[in-house]
Length: 87
Image 1 (cartoon, rainbow, N blue to C red):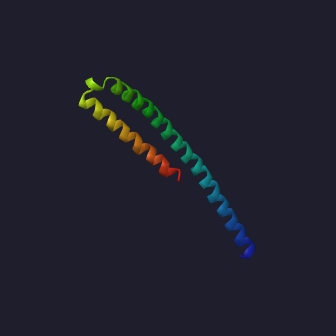
Image 2: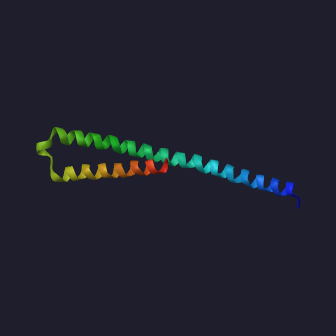
């Protein structure tokens, strides 16, 4: 096999890998976008509950506070995952 044939095969293989990586990158972006959209819905729910608790602070139960705290922690972890994926 000649050098030119070897290089042509190498180029074809690199192109194949590149094309596959490009598709995987696109799919990864969609996964991150889907995760972002889910987190944004959670963010709105968190803000609504937080606002409700702030207005009714004296009547807020420990359980309600813990629920909001857990939701906030879940959101933080989710946003952190996205941040790490997009580095």
